[in-house]
Length: 570
Ligand code: ADP
Image 1: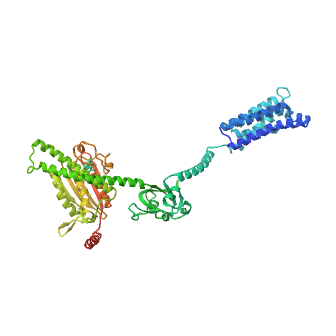
Image 2 (image 1 turned 60 degrees about the horizontal axis):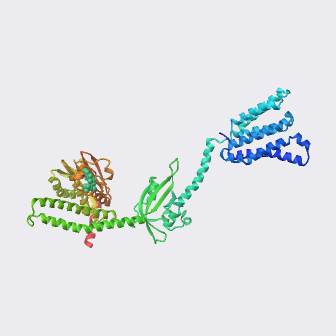
Image 3 (image 1 turned 120 degrees about the vertical axis):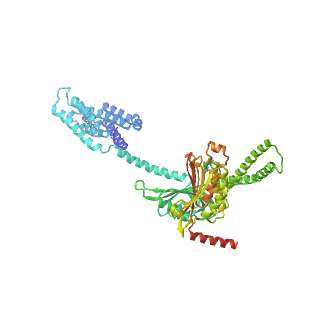
């Protein structure tokens, strides 16, 4: 139901209460001061005093309680009660000449507060009642002019009501502004929330000046909030890479430039330089709601030092354990090989078959420990790597020469393609000169990765061909290892380079593997700023791609020269 705002309804109830109080007090005072003339002229009698007291009691009890739940009904009952009093007062004070017409018309006017339908309805009932009773319809001295005057006035007031009160009715837009007011409170609430979050939260404007900082961020950085607010973020947050090297990119600037969130693990050193935390830093842009204009950034810092320490301990345990276990496994492997050597041991064919199985399993175990050790090292950045300038064409050619025997043993063809496209080679004096692809990598580590990809291609290919290719452009070198094997289902592709992930199919069930190979490959390629991915069609085969940053010839020569300098000095 439409009605004016609650504070206005409260005022209406107060006005109605005052009317009743007038009748109660008026009767009381005229009785005390013995003024019977005034009493009869203004109908200040005991009946109306009682009615008015009942109304006042209602206002203070049931009306008050009801007002909380349904203010509209509570006020309407009050209005009806006071109208009844006015009605009777008019009748008792000479009808047309009664001063209480004013009271009745003000009540009709006030009824407009209760809603656009209530006002005309109220007016209609009242005026009909008045016309019939007050104007003497029943007593026979009814005069049409009086009746019409009352009806006319009632209708007039109701029209006025319509225009006056409807402006105050609570419309949906006004509800909206109430919501806005509530949102203001919400703002307070979110401030409280930001303050209570145990992650550090820092908000900066587009100049990088801190506009908001929560206590957790203050504790991490050891900067009091008041002091840090308004300062440049970089002077408050001393951030370096996890290994303490300076940050390669300013993430804050990057987020402001791209208007896209960015995250990283970084080391945060506090103000005194006495404490260092490994923090997960997530920076998001703050954009204006409609215009998407950049207003600043919000950074969330979570202290992950403890997790990092635990991860490191786990990795250390795995690497120590696998290192220790490799030695006895190698010994077993050696003794089994001796046992199977016809020149040294005499065994029957049944025992030989058992020993061969034991030997294969031991080899697998040795590979598993080796992979575990490498992946644990890769995870905590201890993978030994000595990058040098390598010319990929000749490097791969030699590598393929040694790898191809594995494929040929299985009856697979091998192929090495340099420069997939025509323009990659140029004719000089009738000879095709192939482009030189230089990269800065550790040849042993890269061999490990490519050998693993090649071995996989052979392992998961029954017949056909395994090709290794090398192409590239000015910036990148692309190596690919292609097979005509079983292929990899699309749903497995995103997980393939994770630790211990193996596709669950008949091929992997029969072919032994650790599920660590591709993880190690990825870690190695990432070591040199490269990228590894796969494209595969089930039943047709897979192609694993490696992209590495390419050095141009001058860069390569310069780097080579400095490397030879270094090695001669040491
Ligand atoms: P694994 O020791 O099991 O070979 P990898 O990490 O090297 O571990 O490979 C993970 C999984 O990826 C393998 O188990 C296999 O299911 C799938 N896979 C890898 N290379 C190929 C390939 N060339 N063709 C088909 N599936 C492959």
